[in-house]
Amino acid sequence: MQIIKSVSEMQSLVGQLRVQGQRIGLVPTMGALHEGHLSLVKIASDIADVVVVSIFVNPTQFGPSEDYTKYPRPLEADTAACEAAGVDYVFAPEVEEMYPKGYSTFVLEEHIAKPLEGASRPSHFRGVTTVVAKLFNIVRPHFAVFGQKDAQQVAVINKMAIDLNFDVEIVVAPTLREADGLAMSSRNRYLTNTQRVEALVISRALRKASDMVAAGERRVDRLIAEATHLIGQQRRVRIIYVSVVDLVSMVAIKGEIVPGKDVMTIAVWVDEVRLIDNQIL
Image 1: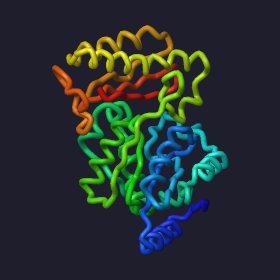
Image 2: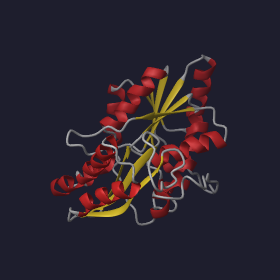
Image 3: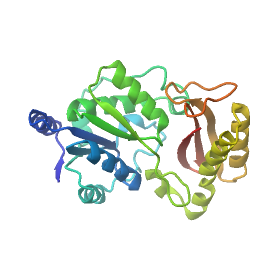
Image 4: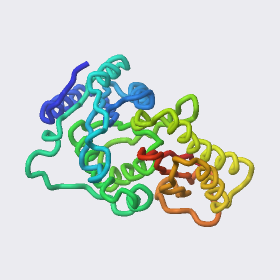
């Protein structure tokens, strides 16, 4: 496995790979890798000849009071995990390599990115779409694999890829969960044992909504009310939003859901730790 830190070196390499007819799979990450990330690597390995994992804590997707400075950066452990998983190349640029002095160009999706995470983190998706667009241009993947856990991010990136004519197939992998049901996330390592126990209410609320739909419930207000009630019973957990939206457009659903096409999305604070999760209904 080779670690590449230079944009120009990465571009030169993928140019050679494409000339050789190699199909490239990209797994974009911010590092602090866990089994969820490695499941994306497995999917990329199954469909591509060459797998590239990008590891880059992207400053432009963090707000001024968010956790950019303390976000975990265990690069040595991450590269070891990538090598064990059969990754061919790790692209791990420094900030100055991705955003050199004088950088001033950004990519903005203006509709899907507005609600939910966009409302509570106004600059977040501008940073996400910008860095992913840059990665698509640098790595030139045939496939890019993202996790369903970040449902709105998947929808935004899908739209960006369509609108900007990126020649890449977006592959969406199911959310991987811990044995206790908590969605795998790099931010889970922030949780104390007590906070983690209370955070389990997120997946319980999503499961309850899914069970209600399976039993025939279609009314959005009933699904949201039940999920909100469950979460509200935990002292350390504060709701940012509980919403049912269209899986593609992220438009809030009113009235009744369409099973398989709508998703319940939840964001909460567990004390000072921000967590998100979702469930297709």
